[in-house]
Amino acid sequence: MPNMTDRNTGGNNLVNWLMQAIYCLTATTTYTPGAGGPSAKVITPPFKLRLMSTAGSNTANGTELSGATGYSAGGSSLGSPAFGNPAGGVCTNSNAVSWTAGGAWSAVLGIEIWDSAGTPLRYLQGSITSVTLANGNTLTFAAGSITADASQW
Image 1 (cartoon, one colour):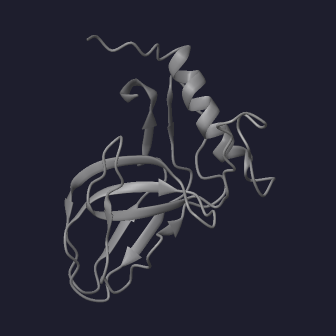
Image 2: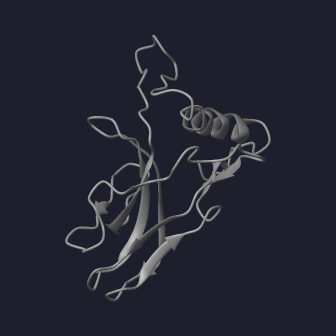
């Protein structure tokens, strides 16, 4: 089946909805898209970047990195705003996120973006080229290096 996403209209609208929810959280404590509807979910900032030792998929969460000195379960904040305004169905992270290994780390194979609710919700996921860290090495995701691209939805 061909890709059915319109990157200029549909893609921008999808990314705008999700990223506007994330972007708007700079001024509020929560955001409820579709408020009042049966599928309304409260999105709770800040958004956190999690490192995954097993990459997730569109339908299943990955396995979060564990036992890695210098990495805290639940990930690190993407800052505020977490993402910039989308253009052409694409937007990128606004701030750098980094970790410094306090010992050897096993392979990191994916990243996921979660909110900070009491029961956190996952919003984005993706595989990355395998990364391992030696003691004292730093893993950094620079501003603009994480891309949400509606053409993949």
